[in-house]
Image (cartoon, rainbow, N blue to C red):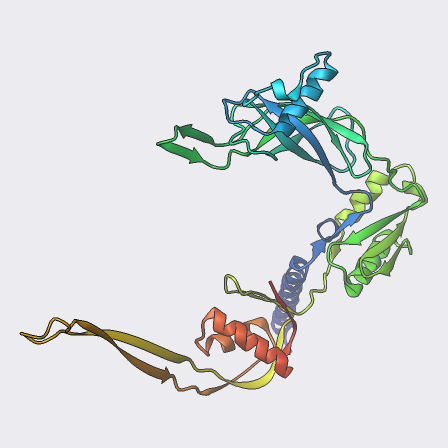
Length: 377
């Protein structure tokens, strides 16, 4: 073998190695594209929202307020707290509406921060257009006040016209007070108070919980994480992060995890929508599908009396019905699929509508050929 042949063979080997590395990198990128961050599939204990609710009054309406006695009683109580004694029966306030005020307290709220408040009528008020919400305490399920709401109400619509000609845009019996609620206190919770954290999966799964714990241990090169059940993972805080819990959580959140997706078919019978998961499989099976069409026609024939008929003769309408039944010839079609693409092509070969496909999927599940869970909405 000459020197030139040796150099040529070395050049070919380098090209082969380069191609193999390119394929490996491409394959790795494909695998990583299916990975999800832990922050997208789970949340830490305590990092959650809380619901607030309160009862208040909206004033300044243009005659579109409540007419009930309960709203008048609320106005009388408010004026009494301000030092004015007024009887509810003496009030006629069409410019006031009783409302329920709701808000969502974000995770780890701090006093002084502002959040949006939603305002909805509970009486017979027609519109909150142009109204102003009076100061309303917002309470949580424990009975404590966590925010105070007040400000102009934005309804995003209007009502115009009178009794004869009336026009309306959008829904005006509910509105929003943008940043109208001020947080006064935060719920009692200390992150990592017991020296560990807990992760809650959005979709409980034993396999995913074990994979999350394994990836956390691999990242920190120690057994800090342990899957407790299909929905929670306990993570011990390392000593070097005992005073930097936020840094520790930020490292965990960006860890990529291969999520195990269950085989599931979701069916919405109202809209005829069908969603088939990637892991769905169909065992070899033959299906015969045909449509039966029944047509009923009714023709009305009029029978009139002949000329010079007696006065008792009258015109008679006689209905004539015709019933036709037509059934399309059904042929057996064998379907099976190891991948989602094969299943879609096999089902499309039947040429059925989505609603017929729903029936076929239910029969396949009954026969044991559909290797997936069917969820009907």
